[in-house]
Image (cartoon, rainbow, N blue to C red; front, top):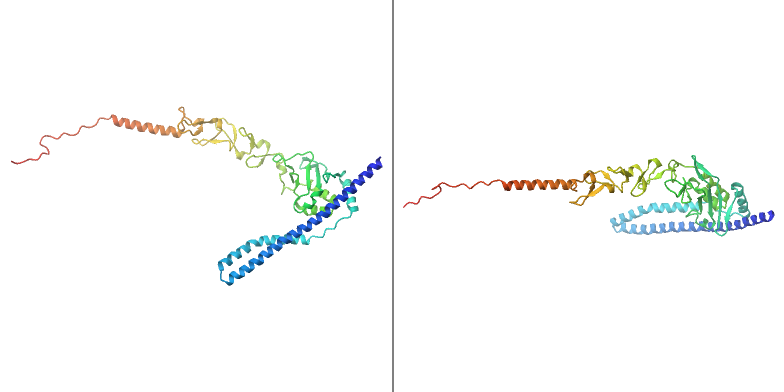
Length: 359
């Protein structure tokens, strides 16, 4: 019985080795197609440069100096794209030719993976192969074990996308982002850093044991210069407004929107001391102090909202109160003027102002 189990295990590994060999063939084909695409881009840029060269030559000969200057500007603007495409093509052309491994080499590599990681998991239906790492602890923060899962059908996309995922088995994600399960893993994708070239070569050459080992070693290390979330902020809380991560005892809970904020994005009501975010707070137009919605009232005159402390007993804001007082004073002055006694017109004495007529 044990012998049959061992034979079945070997048969499955031989079958997996054949699947991997087919995938490596497709990957090599994809690499050459990628090189062809870069060559076509470079050739297109060269053709454009030749066309602009002829136009520039004609513009100069005919004395169209304005047009020549415009063409020169266009060529100068395209130089960066030209250089980029040239470098991309050169990098691919200079890379060593990838020789496909033999079936026996892939089989031996699969056996070595089991020796290194204890178990090799593969799913023929989903065409995935995976291993589980030892528990990862960085700066006394336990992150648990990770499953490194390579999708065999996705290896042909190696030059445009990652064909593998890093899945937290017992996740202890960052407090500010549940998608970050490791300082260098976000949404199950690893930031490879300096390991990018080594990982790509290992997959190209079918050295899966080296591939899994490189990824596992990256997971056991921490680069403080390029984390998705710093370990210092791992257990912190992200401010809903600005995204800044703060410690749990340094965040402020807004009782109106039910979210947490940092000290720079929060305030409190000057009347009832309720904690507020800046978006839920209201600045009184009279005293210019932040208050909550529950501590505001509407002026019966102008219908503007002010804090309750700035509303008079008559239900007026300070501005309307001042206007009413000024109007009242003006009416009082007019009333006083209308009640003052008027002076009688002067009566002229007899014969004053009369003209003497002679007989």
